[in-house]
Image (cartoon, rainbow, N blue to C red):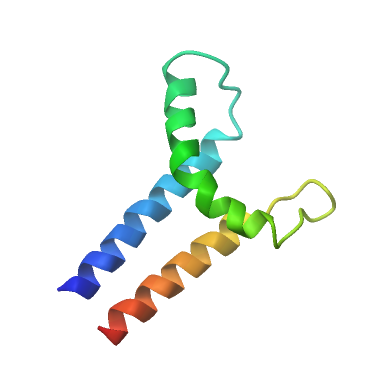
Length: 84
């Protein structure tokens, strides 16, 4: 039961990160989208910044840290769920 909850929370957080990354491609300067983007940033940036310190952008432009962060999150949640 607890393992299932951990996996579901990891899935929800993965979706939040995914939406945050997609919104980073949009020009959000003001309005409700800017507010949503700001809230998502406060939720996602602390976790993503852990990986940005370790992995530099490829070619100076392509940031793969969200992909690595999502893989680590899913792998970690699955590992913890199987150990419980």
